Amino acid sequence: MNKSLKAFSALLTYPSAELQLAAGEIAELIDGERALPAAIRDRLLVLLEELATHDLYDLQERYVLLFDRTRSLSLHLFEHVHGESRDRGQAMINLKAQYEQHGLAMAENELPDFLPLFLEYVSLLPAAEAYESLSQPAHIFAAIAERLAKRESAYEAVFRALIALANVEPKQEDVSALLQEADADAGDLAALDAAWEDVPVSFGPDNACKDGIVARVRGALRPAPGMSTHSSR
Image (cartoon, rainbow, N blue to C red; front, side):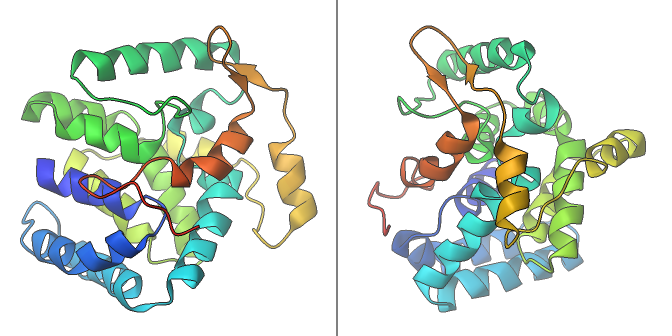
C-alpha cells in the first residue's frame, strides 16, 4: 500500500518529463496492487499510457485546467471542507505538525493539505493509521471522482483507487453535499473567476495568501516522490 500511495502522489503532481519516464515503472507497481479491483487498475493504466505518450505541454495544460483553475477539483483538501473559514488555518497548522512528527519536509510556500503531499505523509504511517487517515477525506475523493467522470478524465481512476485503498464507503450525504457546490467549467473564465473570488485567508504569522494563487504555482514547487525538482514550465 505504501508504494501505491507514493505512486498516486506522483500521478497527481504537475506532469514532468521525469514523470513520463517513470510511467512504466508506476504501471508495473499498480498492475501488481491486488488491493485494487481489476477495473480500477485497468483505468489507471489508461492514465499512465496518456502520461507516457502524450505531448508534455498538452498534459501540463490539461492538469492546470483541471486542478489549478477549477476550484471544485482543487487538490487542496481543506478547500472542500473548510473553504475560507478560520477553522482552515488551525487545520493547516495541525496537519503540518503531524508531517513534522514523521520527518516529512515541506517547501516554504507549500500548503499541507495539498493531496500529493498528504499521500506522501500517509505512505509513512503504519497500516492501521494509514487506512484511518486515508478514509477521512474519502467523501472528497468521491466527489472529485464524480466531477472528473463528468469530464471524461482519466484522472478519475486515481480517486477511485484512493477510495478502494481506504476500504471505506463514503457517506452519500457527505458526497452529495460536496456535489451541490458550484462546478464551473475550465473554459468559463467568468465563472472560474467568480469561484476563486474570496477573501484571502491567513495560515499563520507572515503567511497570508490566497489559496487560489498558491494552487496555480505549487505544481512547480513539489516534485513527484523520488524525482528531481526540475520543472518543465
